[in-house]
Amino acid sequence: MGASDRTLTSIEICAGAGGQAIGLHQAGFSHLALVEIDQYAAATLRRNIDRRDGWEFEREYCDIIHKDVNEFKPLAELEKPIAFLGGSLGEGDLDLLAGGVPCPPFSHAGKQLGKDDERDLFPRMLELVDELKPKAVMIENVRGIKDDKFQDYRDWVVARLEGGLAKDPQTGEEVKYEGSYTVCGWEVLEASDFGVPQLRPRAILVAIRTDVLGDTEFAWPVAKPGAFTVRAALDESMRARFQHFVDKGGALGAKAQKYLVRWEGQPDGIAPTLVGGSKKHGGADLGPSRAKAAWKVLGVNAMGVANSPGEVEQKESWDRDLFRPEGPMLTVTQAAIIQGFPEEWDFAGDKKTEKPLPGKTAQYRQVGNAFPPPVARAVGESIARVLRAARPVGQTSS
Image (cartoon, rainbow, N blue to C red):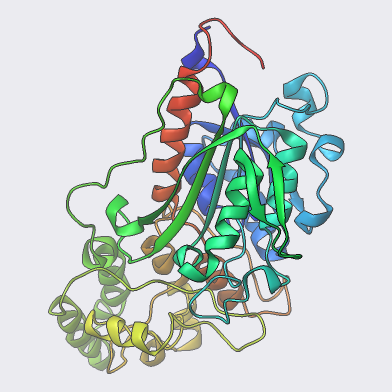
């Protein structure tokens, strides 16, 4: 067995509905654990891993853990991975620790409280790095963390990984840290550069354990030429939604034909950033006022999320969902396509069995909070190249 054939293992915290997990899976990583606090997102992970072709490794060896990551003890509580590892996970065994830690502490849409926000999970992520000593680390967050006001915080994160002097975020005192990683960069990548029809800049930190990196150079992924647009992403599914009613004929069919022609005549372009919204506030919509205006130009009503095609007829909601002056609303599936999810990925949140949130609200929030799979894949492939290059031919275990 050559180095390129060896299984690359990963653990992901704050896994959400699987955006990063899908991308890293496509990049060649096999997940040993996916940790997520939200019950709907954890159910989505279970549902898809149990059903999808290509996820056989995860079905057999991956723990899907529904709990607060602050209570996650990877060296003690993993169960399914034992059969693959031949025992408990040990320090240094893991290839990649990844996570999209919560963005509200650093988001321009929030108060940007940073270290003072109780949702800041960078400290926990770094504790897990200390515990696991993975060969590589990948942390995703919003672009706002690159703002000047967070320079000291970023310096502290880097010092925790590489070693060196930095101000402790809580005390403000300079502390000298020991570190065993090389930070390969903290770059802002734009989702639309990687085949996602959406403006979604994300700040991504990649660190490789220095003894693993050696003389190998980590190369950030290069943007793909050309842009994948909203029309290219949604045209087939949008036409199908209208055509169902066109085929019925009569007044309803004529109305559907009118709005289908209108959809076909709308300008094309890249979507604004989808947002997941807050659990403290009402139902789902596609973003703040500026985003709604951008969606309107593209012929989409962004004031809410449409019922699924099967529900529209049952609820007679075609006027609400399809025949709006601003254009049709997106279904959860269409929003997921805009986020870069595979079309077959479906989202848990059924209102009959998973209360208290209505189905599409719980589902849409998973989509809006996700890391686009194509971006995760691109970064994951760059990390995988380094890890495979670092392994002597014939090595089959850490």
